[in-house]
Amino acid sequence: MSNTEYAVELEHISKIYKLKKKDAGSSGAERFYALRDISLKIKKGDVVGILGTNGSGKSTLAQILAGISEIDEGNIAIHGEQALISINTGLNNQLTGLENISVKGALLGFNKRKIQEITDGVIEFAELGDFLYQPVKTYSSGMKSRLGFSISLALDPDILIVDEALSVGDKGFAKKCLKRMQQLRDERDKTILFISHSLPQVRGFCKTGLWIDGGRLKEMGEIDAVCDHYSDYVEELNDLPKKEKKKLLDEKLKERIIIEEKRSFWSRLRRKAGL
Image (cartoon, rainbow, N blue to C red; front, top):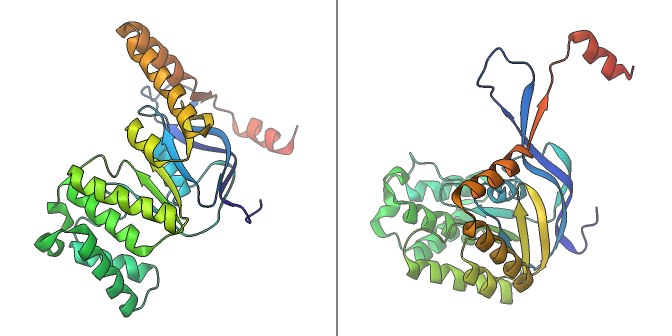
């Protein structure tokens, strides 16, 4: 994989979860493909809007790109330091906001001066006031988003992955975050991956669209074209009668489940030996 032009390179990656069987006595095991056979390349400095209905695999992809979750199949290359911004990711609920900043900096190997610089930046941007000295478990979801977003911005990563972090809290802070990301996009040439259900927000901010459907890559291309196609799909889906919609979604879900029959010890041994 080349690292001269791209921030992210994925080759046939899949993320698989083992499902527990309801019937303990049943044979075989079920594997669920959260993501399946995805190949794509994201250029350095691109701003990519990641679209998809609930359960399509967007957050799983974000966690993989952030290095939080590992893939089960394929190859992945991330060229640069990355940070995931979501409501709860990376925050210790038992620690105060201030302690969370210090711990994050220490884990990254920063010295006291650098940690203090990060802390100053978070205090200025997050506008949490005295709540910064309270345990994160007392925060609202919007306050957690403020803290997480502010820490990630202060860490100044090469790749910023935003997973619905602007969907909670007040609109004023969301606008402030979007303005800051626009500066990073235009002045710093950062690579930004932006997950949001707000199509106007995605259209106005992103250059490239990436549509995930049923754990697979449905489309990737110019942002307006992908948004148009995704919008038409959602509209058609929502126009279906309730039973037809449920049937279609159930069929999509079944396509992501693989049932593996149990094999005896000798059959597994023969299989490994290629017999």
